[in-house]
Amino acid sequence: MYKELIADLSKENEYVKIQPPCPLEEIERAERVVGYGFPKELKQLLQELNGDKYLLLSADEIIRNVETNREYLLPFFEDDFSKEVYIERVDRFIFFATNGCGDYYCYRVNADGIADEGNIYIWEHEEMAEECCWRKVASDMEELITRYYNNEI
Image (cartoon, rainbow, N blue to C red; front, side):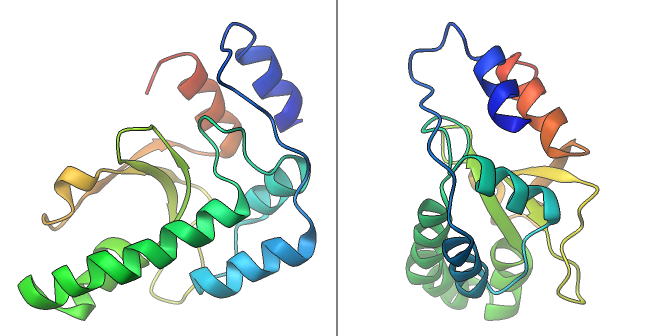
């Protein structure tokens, strides 16, 4: 489903490179590193294609992003705010796609540790020092992909 959607929407985009499916073990590893279970549609997407080298991150890129955030952003927040603020503004998100400008598309994880599957947000890095650095851009993965490739977000 997602593979066909992306292939159709990106016909004229030479930079899109749909990757082979991601093994379940790698998805589970990514969930452990992130610290939250992935929403069903993100797991389905990764099992269908492990990123597209354009919008969607691979499981390994999701892992590297979290590790980088914890290495570089956590100390910044601990110095200027607190670890709790870091958790609220950075670590309670599952970043799975990027706009190429330092911002990420993501799910927000609720206080109970469960991802809000009915909303996909853009997390804007320029705003991370603000109380709210994210805003809703789609209700599901299909809408996000469609809106992104149609230059609507």
